[in-house]
Length: 54
Image 1: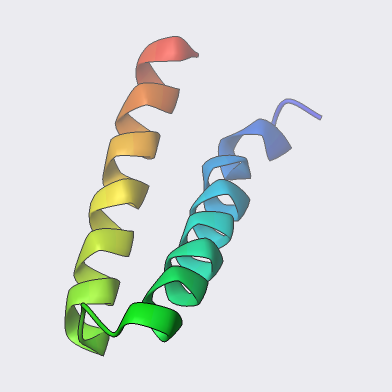
Image 2: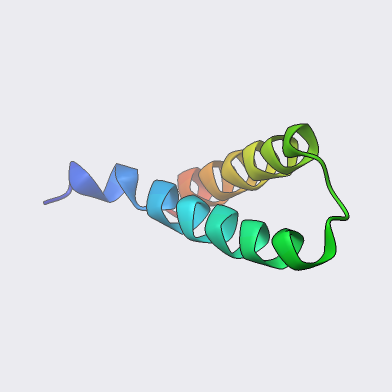
């Protein structure tokens, strides 16, 4: 079980990407490239927090 804890930030990031896509589909504020950029930033931040926490 402890080996699977490493993968918890990935579903959280996927949820953020899905919510961000839904938000952006109504407003069209960001391009696809900007959405990918911010999704990667969120993934990096979550990974860093996760590494410090565990």
